[in-house]
Length: 198
Picture 1 (cartoon, helix red, strand yellow):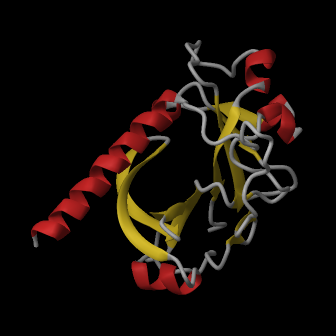
Picture 2: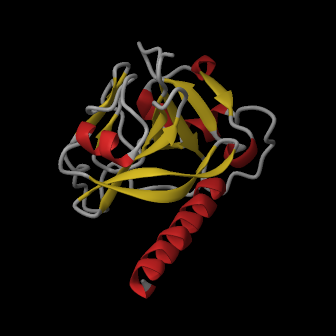
């Protein structure tokens, strides 16, 4: 029992650290390391249909999520969405967190956050790429609020259900509008979000 409590406590602490960092807008792993190596091969892609095997009809629970993502370990974590923190499920592959699955309605999954380096967006977007690299127009974005204040929440190209969350390291505001073009251009992709159609 003490080991189980210790494991849960460490997940809560780690989740709290991740929540704190996401609120600060810190950069994640860049598209290439200092030696110029590319990111790892994508193992999951976020599309209008879902994330890997996760989709509109996936039930919200560890068994249903695990069945949709074979080979992944499903664990409970506490994490941050735009409007607050909550307990949710995360899928880990080889010990690395890939997605966070939030609760939806009618017993189904809700929003899924792609948070791992081996996640790709519908147009090949990867965490760590800049807003400029995404080729998105400023008009595709809105300013984040609450825990994501100062971040840009943007609709991915040619999709209805995928959003991209960009942050500027050390951004000091103003927080009621998108940053100036120069700052926005250097913002880095932190999360790739899929939202169910229902």
